[in-house]
Length: 171
Image 1 (cartoon, one colour):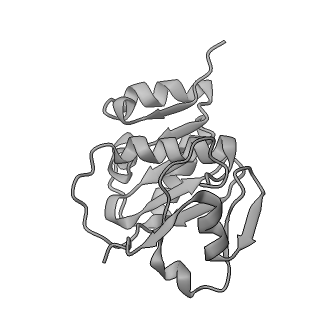
Image 2 (cartoon, rainbow, N blue to C red):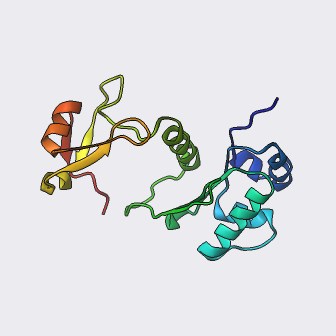
């Protein structure tokens, strides 16, 4: 039995390869908005068009469709019919190489393990929280598994993960 977990970029260059593999019901397809349009021989210009065409991939067998849109963020259409839209953080793109790989890795990790958190890591990795968290009475962070969140002060969080604050927000 073939189990296809995720299909993205390399297959999107040849739309026929991607469309032919949909019958195996891959868990995740991750085209960008231009590639999605090319699969259906059209140009997608609105979020509504992108969502409609992501649903067309689902009708053909894809379970979840995650569409990256560069500076316009991303849209996820889940197998449960939910739609999530996310805008990117403000900042300047220096190099987008690997962005799609990172998006797929983040999605799969979040799906399997739930949110990643410095508190739940097996190793002590450097943890830096934006200094704007100091102005909050409490913060809420992932507990490291689906459905678990922890509310605590910034100070307690930083103690627990041996972290620090810094100005890390891109402007």
